[in-house]
Length: 418
Image 1 (cartoon, one colour):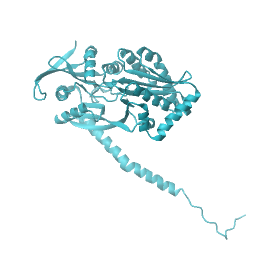
Image 2: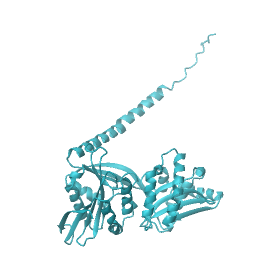
Image 3: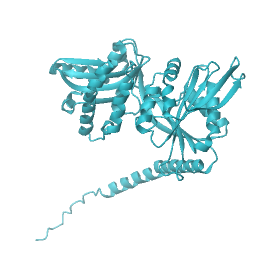
Image 4: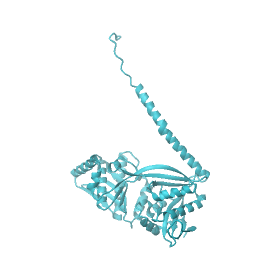
């Protein structure tokens, strides 16, 4: 087994009782695979409710997009050998070796829209586990040029502890805001949920549901059996592509590699009761669909689809409302819309989580160059917002006024020439 023991620390000052921790770094696919059982056990003890931090999601991502890069998964264990923390990192090598900067990044931080990325830590072990992870990272700084913690929740305690300890190690950080993550808490009853919405949204949902019922028998199906989800996943893909073509927007599921990722992921999740596939049918015809994951009373909506022939009857609105209703009836306490602030999400909720990408740098020249470029980009964006765009708008107003010519009054003595 290709695991390298990097250091072993005896600690007593951070924890209330003396403990020994060891840290190991996984660089191989075999080592990654052998972590599966312990990883899932930690996932459960940490009460994680995001599929994006599961071993299945990250190992499937590595299988599809890991070529040319290097695994750098840090595992921390206590004196009994129990896994108490996982830092799911990899080193993203530049396309042109020797020119670009090598980035220590979260696994699955690109291509698949992973939200809520973080370090998995057993409750009560945060400080010592993160301190150990940082020591490991700094000992191996010759393998990376800067650190990128992408798509993290700003209110994550582990992220904030990680940032605090990195700053204490005299590293500099650059923070970029990421798209908000709308979500809605779910009450025990659907009528109570509807009562929290604006009157117009509430009436709109009920009216559109009645309109669909006038067209035929309306059914909402929720597939939870993995074999059934795999069998009907193509129906979701079809509806999603049809809708994307209708609104002339590139479909995220038009990439064959991304589709293969999800098909393989569903197979890998055969023993987990997480995936959900919803269908809205009218007289047997499927007109809308939702795809997501249900973990620990939270449903995360990953993707949706809608048949364009039914657009006027708004099946997407009905599908979302019925999906929320089913989640409430099955004991869920949160419906997570994930990244993006599309208008339809804002109709259902006023809540959202802020997300950021944190990049961390030491004083070496490659990382410092990247930091300088990021700061220049920020300054350029500020100048564009504060100076350039207002100037353009002002100029457009001046031009518009100059093109509006008032008609001259006709003189009573004016004669028209023959």
